[in-house]
Image 1: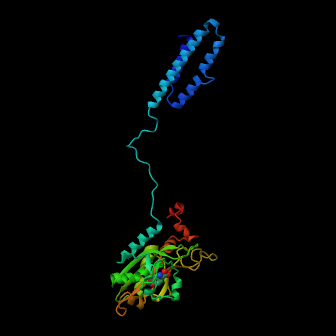
Image 2 (image 1 turned 60 degrees about the vertical axis):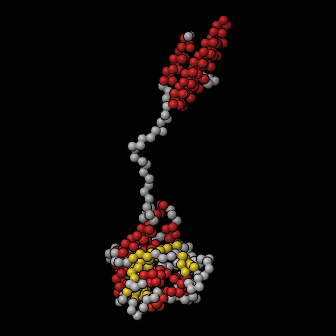
Image 3 (image 1 turned 90 degrees about the vertical axis):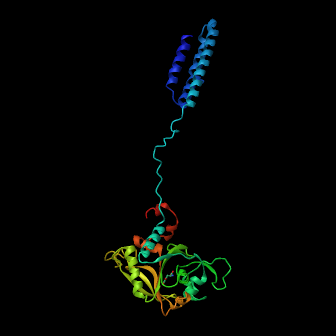
Length: 349
Ligand code: DAH
């Protein structure tokens, strides 16, 4: 072996020992075999070799090339057998942690409201969301064509009408559960019906689907004092101590007398003013409207098969999204955000 051959092979061997990745091997290959690489350089030196030595030099160079190729190929095989970094698994390592999910805040509010009423002996009921007109209107003292029905804009289902119950609708309010509860359970009743309700509105303060919770209590000797006490209990449990309540005379077909229920605003403490010049942004008047309530109308009791001479009852219906926002002291610029499923909004609650 000539000095050149031996020196080159030794240098290559040394470099191969230091090579541990196929990328390194690639650049080593091109260092030796590319057009301007070491081997070509040695080959081109043949021009300066004396004529009678040219043949031996060429032979020597070919042997050198073959040896270098073999060494590099051997290394390539060796590297391909070596497990690549990062592909082995250590089963004792803890797994990747996933972000913790949560339920929608309306679901939490439903759970909380259910617990509050269960504590005083109310049972949660669920009635159909796709309902007959009869349960949403007629049975609640709103006969066909009655103007009060206009207050409950309604989605109608494209289905055959029922001879007694009329058209199919998406329940516009949870009050439709009142008659169903009277028919199913009979007196006494202490029901909390929490459900989705539907009205065809879509603007900054309405979504076509929203939630209501409906209380219904019927027994002998039930009066407005019970209604007031129950709503007060709910308010303290849900909003905390120190909120005031007022009943404002109102009109609903299915209750007599009827009220709208207001709760004092937490932000301005019921004064309507933040300071001597600034009106409260949330309520403007010191009061926030919770929803409707009243003493169940005798016609409704009769429709539910209950003797209105012997029994009396009260009912209320409040919106869940609305009470939740009141609890947070929040006035959303756009209520539709609640159902747009943007996690950046939802994860705040
Ligand atoms: N159902 C009414 C609404 O959606 C609210 C309501 C008012 C419910 C008076 C009641 C009630 O039970 O007594 O606007």
